[in-house]
Image 1: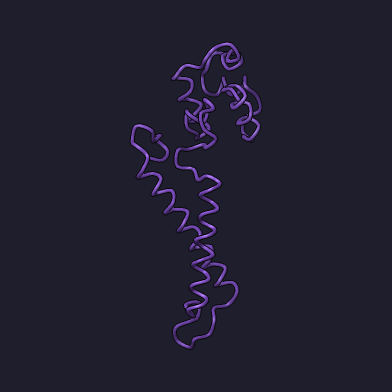
Image 2: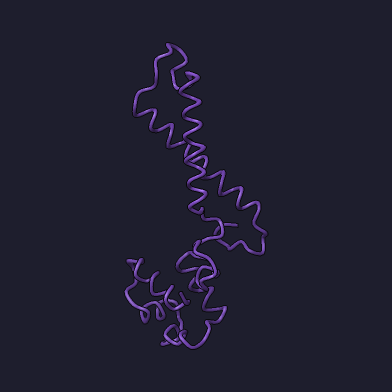
Length: 145
Protein backbone atom coordinates (compact mmCIF):
# COMPACT_ATOMS: atom_id res chain seq x y z
CA UNK A 1 0.00 0.00 0.00
CA UNK A 2 1.47 3.37 -0.97
CA UNK A 3 1.30 6.61 1.01
CA UNK A 4 -1.64 7.98 -0.98
CA UNK A 5 -3.71 4.86 -0.22
CA UNK A 6 -2.75 5.03 3.46
CA UNK A 7 -3.81 8.69 3.63
CA UNK A 8 -7.12 7.83 1.92
CA UNK A 9 -7.73 5.14 4.54
CA UNK A 10 -6.90 7.55 7.37
CA UNK A 11 -9.32 10.10 5.90
CA UNK A 12 -12.04 7.43 5.80
CA UNK A 13 -11.43 6.71 9.51
CA UNK A 14 -11.48 10.42 10.44
CA UNK A 15 -14.93 11.90 10.96
CA UNK A 16 -13.65 15.49 10.82
CA UNK A 17 -12.42 15.39 7.23
CA UNK A 18 -14.09 14.02 4.12
CA UNK A 19 -11.68 14.35 1.20
CA UNK A 20 -8.07 14.66 0.15
CA UNK A 21 -8.74 18.23 -1.04
CA UNK A 22 -10.19 19.18 2.35
CA UNK A 23 -7.17 17.67 4.11
CA UNK A 24 -4.78 19.56 1.84
CA UNK A 25 -6.57 22.85 2.60
CA UNK A 26 -6.66 22.14 6.33
CA UNK A 27 -2.93 21.34 6.45
CA UNK A 28 -1.89 24.07 3.99
CA UNK A 29 -0.62 21.54 1.45
CA UNK A 30 -0.70 22.53 -2.22
CA UNK A 31 -3.87 21.40 -4.00
CA UNK A 32 -3.36 18.08 -5.81
CA UNK A 33 -0.14 17.18 -3.97
CA UNK A 34 -1.43 13.92 -2.47
CA UNK A 35 -2.95 12.75 -5.76
CA UNK A 36 0.49 13.04 -7.39
CA UNK A 37 1.93 10.44 -5.03
CA UNK A 38 1.11 7.64 -7.47
CA UNK A 39 4.13 8.80 -9.46
CA UNK A 40 6.22 10.69 -6.90
CA UNK A 41 7.19 10.59 -3.25
CA UNK A 42 5.91 12.98 -0.58
CA UNK A 43 8.29 15.50 0.96
CA UNK A 44 9.40 15.20 4.55
CA UNK A 45 7.60 18.43 5.42
CA UNK A 46 4.27 17.09 4.13
CA UNK A 47 4.81 13.72 5.84
CA UNK A 48 5.43 15.52 9.13
CA UNK A 49 2.20 17.51 8.76
CA UNK A 50 0.24 14.34 8.01
CA UNK A 51 1.86 12.39 10.85
CA UNK A 52 1.05 15.17 13.31
CA UNK A 53 -2.53 15.54 12.06
CA UNK A 54 -3.37 11.83 12.13
CA UNK A 55 -1.14 11.07 15.15
CA UNK A 56 0.76 8.32 13.34
CA UNK A 57 4.43 7.70 12.62
CA UNK A 58 6.04 8.61 9.32
CA UNK A 59 7.01 4.95 8.89
CA UNK A 60 3.30 4.09 9.05
CA UNK A 61 2.52 6.70 6.37
CA UNK A 62 5.26 5.26 4.16
CA UNK A 63 3.90 1.74 4.57
CA UNK A 64 7.02 0.50 6.34
CA UNK A 65 5.05 -0.74 9.34
CA UNK A 66 1.47 -1.63 10.19
CA UNK A 67 1.87 -0.07 13.65
CA UNK A 68 0.56 3.50 13.76
CA UNK A 69 3.13 4.32 16.46
CA UNK A 70 6.47 2.75 17.26
CA UNK A 71 5.06 1.90 20.68
CA UNK A 72 1.80 0.31 19.49
CA UNK A 73 1.27 -3.21 20.68
CA UNK A 74 1.33 -6.01 18.15
CA UNK A 75 -1.14 -8.90 18.02
CA UNK A 76 1.55 -11.06 19.65
CA UNK A 77 1.91 -8.50 22.45
CA UNK A 78 -1.86 -8.61 23.00
CA UNK A 79 -1.83 -12.43 23.14
CA UNK A 80 1.09 -12.34 25.59
CA UNK A 81 -0.77 -9.87 27.81
CA UNK A 82 -3.84 -12.13 27.87
CA UNK A 83 -1.71 -15.17 28.79
CA UNK A 84 -0.01 -13.31 31.64
CA UNK A 85 -3.34 -11.91 32.83
CA UNK A 86 -4.92 -15.38 32.88
CA UNK A 87 -1.95 -16.72 34.87
CA UNK A 88 -2.17 -13.85 37.40
CA UNK A 89 -5.91 -14.36 37.88
CA UNK A 90 -5.42 -18.10 38.25
CA UNK A 91 -2.69 -17.57 40.86
CA UNK A 92 -4.74 -14.98 42.74
CA UNK A 93 -7.81 -17.20 42.77
CA UNK A 94 -5.88 -20.28 43.88
CA UNK A 95 -4.13 -18.43 46.68
CA UNK A 96 -7.27 -16.81 48.02
CA UNK A 97 -5.91 -13.36 47.17
CA UNK A 98 -9.22 -12.40 45.61
CA UNK A 99 -10.84 -12.46 49.02
CA UNK A 100 -11.28 -9.49 51.34
CA UNK A 101 -8.67 -9.46 54.04
CA UNK A 102 -11.00 -8.82 57.02
CA UNK A 103 -13.62 -11.51 56.62
CA UNK A 104 -12.14 -13.71 53.86
CA UNK A 105 -15.23 -13.34 51.67
CA UNK A 106 -14.53 -13.42 47.97
CA UNK A 107 -14.81 -10.10 46.17
CA UNK A 108 -18.07 -9.48 44.35
CA UNK A 109 -18.30 -9.89 40.58
CA UNK A 110 -18.05 -6.15 39.83
CA UNK A 111 -14.95 -5.70 42.01
CA UNK A 112 -13.36 -8.77 40.43
CA UNK A 113 -13.97 -7.38 36.91
CA UNK A 114 -12.54 -4.00 37.92
CA UNK A 115 -9.47 -5.69 39.37
CA UNK A 116 -8.96 -7.71 36.20
CA UNK A 117 -9.36 -4.57 34.03
CA UNK A 118 -6.85 -2.75 36.21
CA UNK A 119 -4.34 -5.59 35.94
CA UNK A 120 -4.82 -5.74 32.18
CA UNK A 121 -4.23 -2.00 31.84
CA UNK A 122 -1.14 -2.26 34.02
CA UNK A 123 0.26 -5.06 31.86
CA UNK A 124 -0.47 -3.04 28.71
CA UNK A 125 1.29 0.04 30.11
CA UNK A 126 4.26 -2.05 31.20
CA UNK A 127 4.55 -3.58 27.73
CA UNK A 128 4.42 -0.13 26.06
CA UNK A 129 6.99 1.27 28.50
CA UNK A 130 9.29 -1.70 27.85
CA UNK A 131 8.99 -1.10 24.11
CA UNK A 132 9.63 2.60 24.66
CA UNK A 133 12.83 1.90 26.60
CA UNK A 134 14.07 -0.46 23.88
CA UNK A 135 13.35 1.93 21.01
CA UNK A 136 16.25 4.27 20.22
CA UNK A 137 15.37 7.94 20.68
CA UNK A 138 15.98 8.71 17.01
CA UNK A 139 13.02 6.43 16.12
CA UNK A 140 10.60 7.85 18.67
CA UNK A 141 8.14 10.41 17.43
CA UNK A 142 7.06 13.44 19.44
CA UNK A 143 3.85 11.73 20.56
CA UNK A 144 5.39 8.86 22.42
CA UNK A 145 8.96 9.54 23.30
